[in-house]
Length: 270
Image (tube, rainbow, N blue to C red; front, side):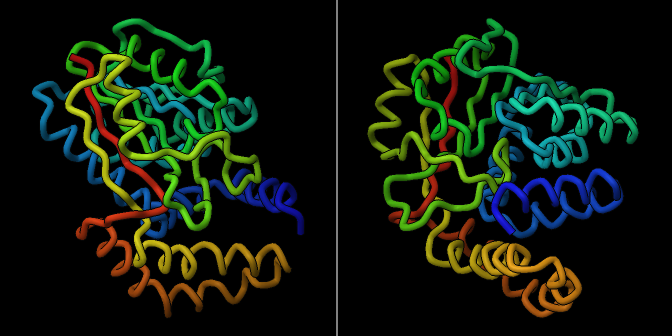
C-alpha cells in the first residue's frame, strides 16, 4: 500500500466509523511524543492566563487532534482551526458540531496570506512551519495576528534530527518534503528580529522519544502499509507495548535533551 493510499484509507475508515475517530484522538494523544510536549505547554498557557475564554488559532489543524484535546480540557476556549484540505475541514466541522463543541470552527486558509490583526491570545503551529517556503512571512503573520501578551507555540523539525518524525497535523502520514530544518539559536534570532519576546526552546524526541515512536507509530504504520490484515493483530500488540510507550514518552518530557529530532518553541508578543 502506497503512502497516499494508506492516508486515504485511514481517513475513509474514520469517516465511516466516527466512534473510532474519538479512539484515534485518544491514541494520538498517548502515542505521539510531540503531543506530550505540546500538552504540557498548553497547560502552562492555561495556568498563566487570567482570562478563561482564550481565542486560539491552530495553524495546520489536520484531523483536529489538538482541537479535541483543547475543547475537552479547556471548554471555554474559542478555537479557529486552519487547514488546506477542504474535505478534512468539512469532516472535522461535522464531527465537532455533532458533539456540541460549538466553540471550535475549521476552515481552509493559506498561512502565507492569512492575517487577522490583534485577534488571538494563542497561536499553535505543530509540524507546519518546516513545510512552508516563506516561513518568515508566516511567523510575521502570526505576530501581527496575536494580541499583546499573546503566545506563539511551535513544534518544528530540528537540524539535529536523525530521522523525520511522523507528522500528525496538516499532512497526516503524508510524504511532502521538508523545506526547512531549524537550529534553536537561529530560530530564536529570527523570532527576536520579528519582535517576539520571552522566547524559550527545548528539544523533543530524544533517545526515549525516538524509541517510543518506533514502537508506537513506525512499526504499526509499516505493518498496515504491507497489509490491512495486520489491523486484527495490532490491538494485542498495543496491549503489550502500551505501558512501555507511555513510560518512554513521559521520560522524553521530564528530562531535558541536548539534542532531539524536534524543537518545541514558545514565544510572546509584547
